[in-house]
Amino acid sequence: MTRPASKSNRIPTGTQIDTSGASVKLTAMRPKTALKQLGNLLKAPSFTAQEAAHLGVPSASLAHYAKRGDLERIARGVYRSSGAPTIDNFRWEDLFAATRSVKDGVICLVSALAVYDLTEEIPRQHWIAVDHSTRHRAPQSVKVIRMRNLKLGRTEIAMNGIKLPIFDRERTIVDAFRSLGLETAIKALRAALAIKKREERINLEKLRLYAKVLRVPIEPYVLAVTT
Image (tube, rainbow, N blue to C red; front, side):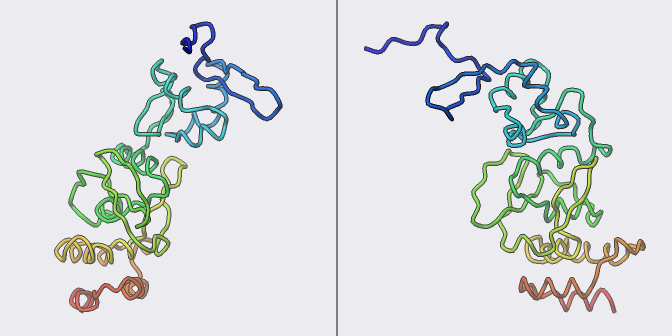
């Protein structure tokens, strides 16, 4: 009969196991030392468990720091330092955390329309697109949308120096015609055409190209709005 390990023989949380040699070497990672290993991640608005792991800090240590109050767990697999800067625009702080929690996710549809001020709707969930073949567990605050061709129209927005993936205005409007209904899509198209800033104006040629690639018949609506 195997006896349970005594407390003195248990491997402490945060211990790193080196099996590269002939013998097994256990090196206990001290909490303060491990926290220092996070380096610049502690200055970022948030970081993922995967980013911490690349620096040699395991998930168990992150959970320990969160329990102790040094870190805050803001989403599944997403943390930030208790003293980290917050997003300048608090309106998007939750979206920031949600996007970081979805691997290879892209902000899309209602959430993208809201970012671009092309809708008056306030999203109850954060709409994040993933590849159609991907399975992903997400919190209730995230609405995962499986799509094909995530590269088409993919761009980035910067929040506090962190770049987040999002579909550009043209792709977002085409997706709205395909997935959100005519009323929402037409309102978004009208709003986009009314933008005066040159760098924020939509490109009708690009819009038509995206619609052709994605096989979304939007031409009658474009003509109705522009003529």
